[in-house]
Image 1: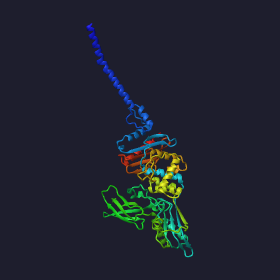
Image 2: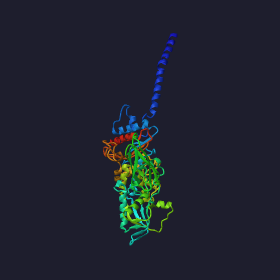
Image 3: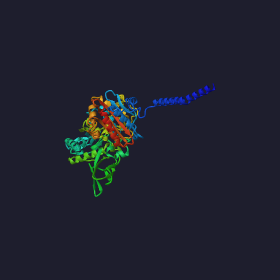
Image 4: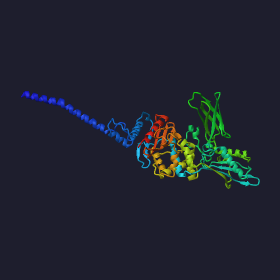
Length: 532
């Protein structure tokens, strides 16, 4: 009996020692498996389109989706998880134009600074609100009494501006001399040999301050920071030819600006990587300083201090050259107001001749192709001038907001402070940009003009050198945006089957520089164009 009892005890010990640890191991393994299954898989982001998530969840670990869609989603995911995103933000939205169905989306409701992609908002809305055939006009007028016997005008000549950015612009085959000769000839045809009065520049159709409040001092010192007024001439810039001789620099200005003193502090520096010149000076300030460093002879532009006054002065000089005497100095309505010089309110102005700009379609094309800030700001204020009677920046933006609300665009989070995107306070989402692009695409009266205005990958404008020789070459139409720590694109691309998609992509404050981020986005151009 004792022997049997001892044998029984030994069997129990064996069971405890061998099988109990096995049970414990199975319980632990089951717990770990359930915990891992409950957690999201590493590398999958909710912000990526759900199709990408489902592919990664279902496919075996070693399976790579090499389809066009899989490659696109994988590349987007690689940007999401790149170390260079640290401290910065990026957003990408790709949809079908017709259905609006999302194909890929990342942070699409994050408000980011778009730089010049903001021109899409301005130029497209202007084409819709003003029409592609809208023309800016500048009207030459006179008041007072015209003595046809003595051929004397007892009154003034007025140049009534309508905000035309192309007046006297070489971009559109004109010049300051051409405009002034035409006007002097029109005055001569009235039978006027002398003027007992003045030439007055009238820029009152737009607000007097040409520079939006939020532009930085750094930007307005450069020619790309030139703002428009109600009376513009020569795109409100003068040309500077910087010459280097015996390590000393000299500057020649064209056209000459009466009364402007330009100090030269540009230095010759053979070690500088790239020549640069800028002009310090605020609007209406006639003492200015050219700054910079050059390797050799160099060309740059600076802002005309008072374009309306320069326009009036140029016409006065042209009249004298054509044998028409004029008693008083040239001035502007602004200067007359500041000096408390009142005009006769009962005096009626009569039109002499009208100078028209090219159609808005051509101006928008130039604006978007070369990303011209001055034209974008002029077009923005023209919206307010045409619809509200006065070219105000804030009024124009309110009108654009109203336009988009009528098209059911959710404007929460948008901040538009100018028409060109130069202001750092500008903010917009890729979601909003894509929805705007879809609105343009559905408007048959606007879309052909707007679509043609966008640069073409590998062919034209600011993306001429991008995606050259790829599926995006000649296919993708997009507006670009570049500022320090900002890179952006928005536009249209066709798939291999010819289906049109629209997209927007913005990167802010990443550890990639602008060129590196440009190359990242250019690869997205190609991957989008490869979609079936």
